[in-house]
Image 1 (cartoon, rainbow, N blue to C red):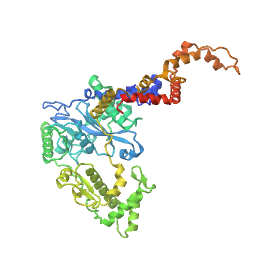
Image 2 (image 1 turned 180 degrees about the vertical axis):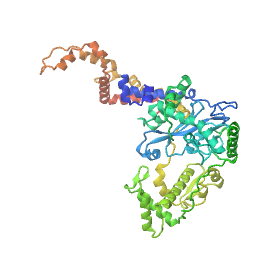
Image 3 (image 1 turned 30 degrees about the vertical axis):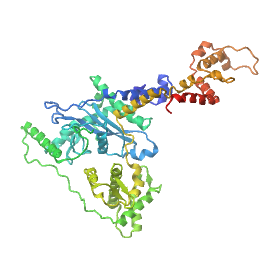
Image 4 (image 1 turned 90 degrees about the horizontal axis):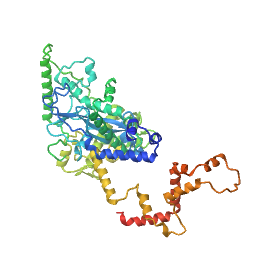
Length: 568
């Protein structure tokens, strides 16, 4: 039942009809299997192994001591209505941001799921590194990442502004520089994480569409599917899903000093990447001596943009008018949407500002759009700072309060934060009202080890208390002394069953007011054995619930009798 739900994404009712079991049984044992998988999660994850020095793999021989590749993917989920703005994607879908780390053989090493879609991939990676049971990257080793991540110690990213995706090389483009050759080899090796995600979603239909469970259960389902994926690839010599995936056309697209626990760019790591690219380039050119390549290979240069040509310096008055106009649109249901504002709101803001400041010359694009993005970035930076220890907010001065050393250490790798120290930001509360609900919090994020600790803690509490929810009514029946209640009788399960059996026995003939119907005659002709073996659990539950309603005083006294044995 558990694998059927994961592989085919069937509803509880469909599974109950297929397996001839009640919906409660299906739900109970699905969650029991899910928790059992989490309890033994350490047996399913792949242990990372670095690429050896003598590797002959055509994709990985260039990247010595590399442990694998990592990337993020989006999996559609169902969340409460008030949380949807944080999970919405550019395609207007509700999805969670999942961080996956895989080895060279397409097996997952680490998975962190549950983050909101609005969270940047780098923020999710920082959270994975900062967790007690998070991702461990030993010093001297690294993972391959895409351009969405920083090229930092432990994470090797490709060169920006150069050809990278494999489809670009398939179209006949030639690599004309060490950077492009490095990007081609990097893309070929890092493609394992894309293939891993593709195989995962092909194998488990529950990951291809929003499931019917709460966000915490959906988060657990994601990495449990990754665990079973590892088990299948470990035990099966040939993975049929991989063969099917290959036939598809290509798609565009902790406190220990021995581990990397931060994402920080450095000149040493940048020079190391450049030296590695030059080394790979020289080796390739030496092996292709049959080609007379020009020694004056030049890098493709990107066209110069017009940055600074439309730059505008905003005054305090203009900022105040912009924020107040933005608040007016936010409270207007005609312009408010789940993703922020409806199309055309920039032109509406331009007209509102022009009416308040005559002759300002402020245009919707690029002036208003650029200023809103700047103010939003500053609000996000301040919001992140206030969520850290050592930071405070001065309401009178409307500015951040903290020690300079603490701020410099925190803002070391945050470009938008350096200009905010000691400067007031009058629009913090107004922008918080507009964009506060869109901020990703990561409250539902978690990995397998964290959930294993939580589940084992719940098991320990149940064992200590000795009473669980499923055994409540059984314990209640043990504490009731029915003999002391004269004139009131509560039927036990055996008596209830005998009562139904006795009802099935032929009753003494009595003159009915009307002739019995065919259905009634057929009911009285059934034998006692057939009635005893019939699935009459529904009637028994109904009778039991009716008795419990009538004898509520008995239930109250039974609970009082159980009180000395509980911790409540």
